[in-house]
Image (cartoon, rainbow, N blue to C red):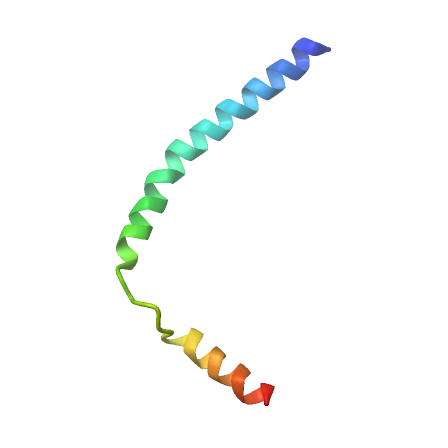
Length: 57
């Protein structure tokens, strides 16, 4: 029973490592492509913000 749990944990750790090695570079690339947009809102986020502010008060 104990070896079964250890095998399961080992398999899960290997799967996690594999996924992080495959997905990590894609996430880093996407993050690098976002650029510096500053703290302001733009696009749909700005429209949503203005709409919520109008409905609030």
